[in-house]
Every structure is written in C-alpha cells, then in structure tokens.
Image 1: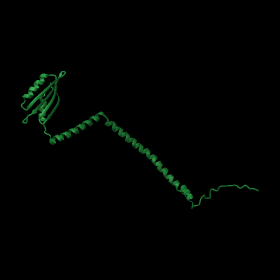
Image 2: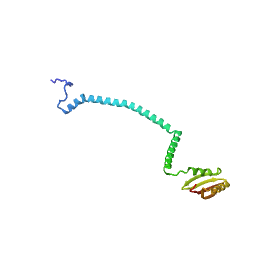
Image 3: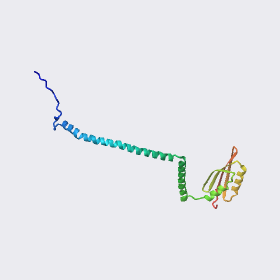
Image 4: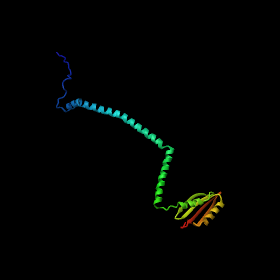
Length: 182
C-alpha cells in the first residue's frame, strides 16, 4: 500500500531564477567575487613582502643615524663645535667693531704692559677714555710703585687707587682718565 518513495536532491538544477536579486548576488559572488578575492590576496602578499624590504631599509637608516649620533656625541666633536660657535660669535663682534667702534688696541696694550708682573689683574675695562682696573697682590710695595708710576705718567689724569686688605692679599681698584692728546 504505501510505497516508500526515495527523496533525492538534484544538484544540477538551478536554485534560483535569473530574475531573483538573491540569485544574481549568489551568481556574482561565486563567479566574479572569487577573482576579486584572488586580487585582494595578491595585494596582501605584495604588501607582506614589501614590509620586509621597508623594514630592512628602516633598520639600515636607524643604524646609520645611531652611528652619526655616536660620532656627534664624542667629546672632541662637542669641543670643536663649541669652539666653532665661539669663532662665529667673535667674527660677528669683530664686524660690529669694524663698523662703528673706535679701536684702542695700542692704548689697551700700553695699559696692560704697564701692570707689573707681581700684580694679578682680575678685570679691566675702558669706556670713553676712562680706565678701570681690579688688581690683586700680596705686595703692598709693588702696589705703591705702580701707583707712583701711573700718577707720574703724563698721558693719564685723575688717577685714583682704592686699596682694601683681605686676609693676606690686597685688592686694588684703580681708575684714571686717558688724556685726549695721548
């Protein structure tokens, strides 16, 4: 009476009709999508291998920079850089002096050579013909001789000495005016 019918699935029959939206998406996905997936995989592999090349270049660049940093952190290099900066500053100052300041190198040389060797010159300034010296010495006699020599010099006027004693040394503040005809 009841006959058992066998149920089967036919894989050869199309699932959807061509007018169906889901059917068209299914067909597009399995026909065109596989090629897009293949193209994306090729791009990903290209980026993956490019990463190795770029990492090697980055490592080489980092190593080169580190070598140069070690060279620049060398003490001799730092000292030369400071010396170069000082030379540049000095050249700028010399240019300013050339442009507008009166050169008094002979006057300065004469004043400095007149200071006896027993006196230690701490500071020296000259402005508008007025000279100021700060001298330190242990010999009061040498200071007195220097004072006498300055007061006898016809090129200087208004010579003043201010002597103070600190411990075993004498600190002397000397100031005088250079005459205009000097």
